[in-house]
Length: 79
Image 1 (tube, rainbow, N blue to C red):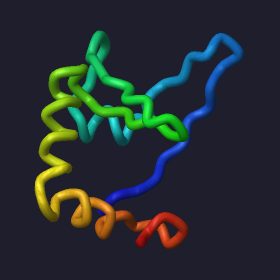
Image 2: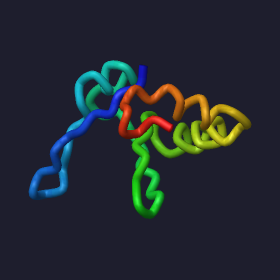
Image 3: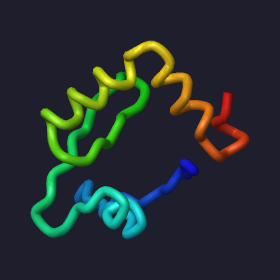
Image 4: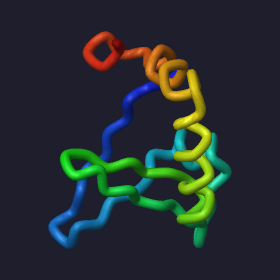
């Protein structure tokens, strides 16, 4: 089940990853995430840049992207 999670941004532009995501992704202190700027949105992916590139490649394989969208459990975002 995919959920949409929000976090606040401080005046200094800092935020923290919600605990449920840190635990799910296995990220602890010093762990890496990658930010992909999509223009009007951003993707945050665990594991740093190389892991992010591999995940984007995986999503672009026929069907993987559509399956991911179908798994979103939020009526405002589901397609």
